Image (cartoon, rainbow, N blue to C red; front, top):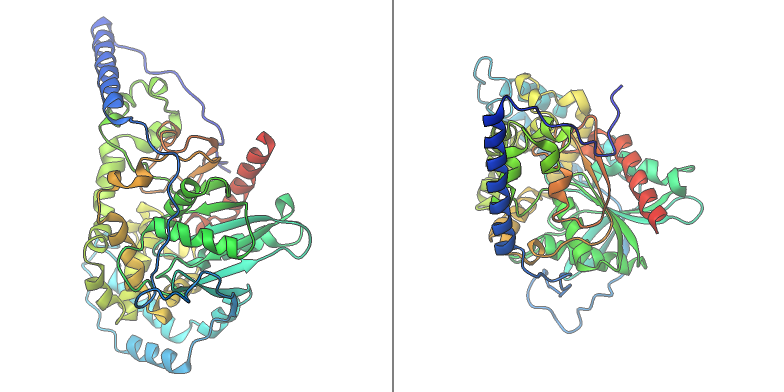
Length: 475
């Protein structure tokens, strides 16, 4: 069985085919280094070390003097009316399907032939009430922060002291992604003596209230989650994140490094990827060790255009829509459960493995059960949160990412990075170091994709525990 690699192993570069080839390579290296030095001089200015925490208000109307951030924490239980379920069934019964192209599989998006089967299962076999009981096995709470209700799961070990850990989801996921991980981290006999896990829903997602005004981006979410942890009496904590959760965790570390003991990420794109990376892109396949690449980096990155740029272009159409006009497509998805399922679950197919596009069922049941997938969809449906969740793209991508303050601030808390092979873009350690200044563990995971905690919970738990051991061993 393949095992994840947890260290970087340099390997020899390819031998030359003659003096002229070697000379050309040397000239290219000299030119690349010169360009790199120029770019370093142009772009590497002195930057601030932290992000100001600031404050915000996302509730209706203006903030009143009586509105202070000391709201009580109230227990919450997931409940859905029978009327809503009957409405869902009626909409599923009246779904209007479009015939699929012959042999198209998932290459045109969610295959409508399989969508018929999924809708039939959803309507006749899926037991929402059973899933609600499962969702309510962990304690849920709500509290008002900056004018909006924030939902979170909060689980403590049965006995003993525990390490506080916040786990943050992304789109189109939810807090439910972490249920198997939470169980392992908090059960009796858990590694490192167990964790006190706080798993919030990002405002605008699931059971967290949506902001009422524009501007709620990852920086605002980071501030809200710091306030949540303070309200829980937790002053020092670890943070794990994937997708938007990875960016929010990064922002939390940049904003309050004195509170964040370390961040563990399975999604860590380099926001300032640009001309300064050109030398390593050009020379990486030929002189990998000189560029700081390992053999695994080369296998996952090159040919660069086909494995990274082309894949991102092909798979990021949703991002351009949601980053510009999310409310338009959101109107359709919020009205059609079948459309919502197709839109969300197409991502659970291709982002788990691009090869699943060759299958008529999108490979959805290869890694997840239909009940698991539909429960995640149901969290969006019963809360009507698909539109507000997609606005996170508009708020974060509506400005030049390189002009944001978090693009200019490094991450100086310990970081653990888990690189899964089926992630849309591989980020090698040498690139990650430009942002994360104290990487204490970097793991080449042997399998898995974008929804790592949902797909490979044991691997996430093991790597998280390994990272925290490294942090605490180093003092």
